[in-house]
Image (cartoon, rainbow, N blue to C red; front, side, top):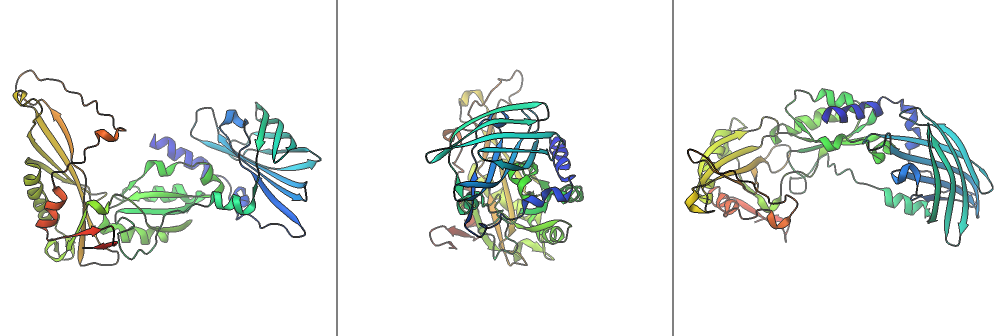
Length: 399
C-alpha cells in the first residue's frame, strides 16, 4: 500500500509545473460591475464521486465567462485522482468546451445547459472523459459569492515554524508543506533517516491537487527534530516546515528538570527507562518484562505481566504495554523534560503449561465503552516520583 501511494504521488508530481498555473489565488471580483459566483455541488458527475467547481463571471444576470474544474477518481474504486479544468464558451444558456485531463491525458468534452429556477439553478447535458460519458441532470444548485467560496475552502496547514513551547504542538511531530513536483525527491531523501512518515499524509486528494502542494507528517525523535526541521526548510520545493500536533496529550504529560537525566547534553535512556519502569511496576502491580526504545521516534515501549483477575482459577496472564515519550518542553535548548505516558493496553492470554485456552478480545476498537481509561494512577505516580509538574488546562499553565 505504501508503494501504491508513493506511485500516486509520483504520477501527480511528474506533471509539468505549468499545469498548476490555474492554482494561483482566486482573482478578485472584476471591475466594471462584473461579479464572480461559484457552484460547488453539481450532482451526477462521475457517478456522484466528482469534486466539482464551476466558476462563473457575470455582468448582471448574464454569464460572460465560465470555468469548470472537476476532480474525480481516475478509475472506479481507485484512490488515485485525475482532474480537468476547462474554459467554457458561453452561448446564451449553453456552456461548452473541450480540454484534456491532467493526469491520464484523456480527451474531455463538456456540453451543459444552465437554467435559473427561482433562487437556484438547474444543469443538464453531457460530460465525456475518454470513453466515459455522463448524462448530467442536477437541480436545486445554489451559488456562492467569491468571499463565501474562499472562506469555505480556506484551510490551516497546522505548521508552526518556531513554537514558543510544546504545549500546543508536539516535540516529535514534524510537518512539511512541499510543492507537488518536489514531494517524491523529498521523500526519497528521508530514506534511512530514522523517521516515520504518516502514510495517510501521502494521499494526493483533490484539495492537494488544486493547491499544488501537500503537507507531509513525520514523526521523529524529539532530540533530532530541530535538525530535521532545519534540513527540511532548506530542501527544494519546501514552502513551510515546523512542528504540528502529535502524540502529546497534556493531560497525560508531566514536566520536570532535565539535569539529572542527561549526560553530556544527551538523554540517558537507560536511567530514564529504569526509573519509569520501577514506578509503573508498583502502580500496575505487574512485573517488568522488557523495555524498548525506537530509534526512529524516540518512543519507549514498556511491557509488564501480572496474573489476570478474570476467572482466577484459570490462572490467565495479563500482558500490559505502556508507551512513553520524553522530549524537551520547548525547542532551541531547554532545562526541562516533558514526559508523555500513554494509556496502558492490556491483553489477556493463557500461558499455563500444557493445553491452553484460546481467547479472543471481541471489544470493538470503535466502541468508546471498550476503551481502557484506568491507568492505575500511573501518571500521578510518575509525577510524584519525578517531582514533576502537571498541566492546568483551566489556566493553560504548568502547576
